[in-house]
Length: 599
Image 1 (cartoon, rainbow, N blue to C red):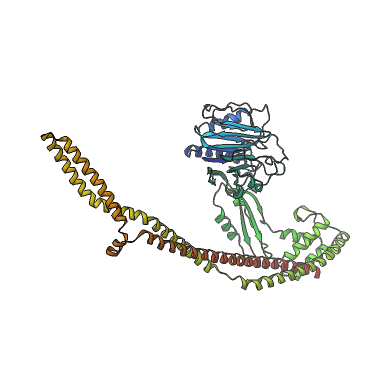
Image 2 (image 1 turned 90 degrees about the vertical axis):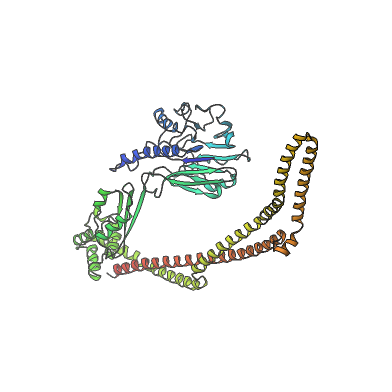
């Protein structure tokens, strides 16, 4: 049974409200749904599962008419629909009694308002509380569905669900997995043994293979956190197989672009890095400029705001001007004096320690670290109290950072001591993997040859019998033909018939005799012509198969050993890199804090 699975389409929603492209985003949600219907029309399936939040609100008759008209193009596809917390259903709502023109099944425990013939229409097996179950006899398929009946549901709806008929293909459709919408975990489905569990609510694709749980995610992304591909699930399921994959089909994606910048990075280099990562103008971008401790350049990304859909930029400006302004306006108190001493003590272009001190003091004096939005002048007493309090805190911070560096050093030493135990074995791993594949192919080849032994023997035996019987059959046919003419002429049909029967019996006996002779002269033919004996060939191939299987077992054990070593080596190297990064951050921070304290 082939199917498509969608969820969280949110027709009527306007993502990125307040941006210049908000209306385009709202329209793209409808366009994406239409594109999905086009795909389903060109690639027919038996079922479409819709697991909630098809609409971003409780649907009206107008909304239902719109989707029903699109679904009605799929004349041989059954649409199975359960509601989510956005398009939740209540008795008396428009969808409850809507008469669909498509093969639309709403799993709410009531009658089906669709035009499907009685013979083809699904049967309702039971409706137990909130769980509805319908059966499609043609596919030996039972579909369980759980609708949402409110915008908030703190009850775990799947607790009491269990399969009634293990001989059927069993599918569960539900919506939830969040704290306020049926709070269940995908792991809970492992023991339930459904052939497929289709879920809605999470907007990114996710699957839990052990429980056969699939979230298709939304057709179009809705929020800046919903990065990665979006689309629908295409799958096949029967009693033995569950196969499902995501088909990316969205008009746009939220994409995060990370740019690393140091003291040598130029405006042109930043622009080139961004351009290289902007694969489509339809994507909605978050651009992060990750500055090193020595990067104080201001970058201008206004051209990208005009050219692309940029929803957020971080690290575009460095607050150098605000720092100098804060220093100049507070030279009469300890805040400005300390900033000046830090600046003159370190390199003129090194603002790292200055920014840390300004952030610390701004936090204490004005309650935040955004220098551009806070007052920039303070009195001597307030600045002195804040400075003294900060110095006490930083003294303790130095001890913590020093201890952190010591711990990093110890961890680094431990990792370096363990590295020789788990050397880089990538070459051995690849070589063993290739040898295992080659040996497995050899095993399949030997097994194939073993299967062919009896087939070859049968063909040779048939050829031997036909070699002798075929000429006799020709002679028999000619004899019978001429004999029949002669019998007609001399009116001796009875004698001819007897003769014919005797000849046919003789031919049959002869064929069986030759068959017996071929089967019982195996060793003679081997001695005279070198013809192999099937039993001996089977024995020979059987020995080879066992030998190859032993070799495969050894290679698999060796491969597993190399894989374990490789994984541990990779993890150790990764841990070492993380330790080095942590050490670098701690050193920079410690250096800045010591500069502040010494100033």
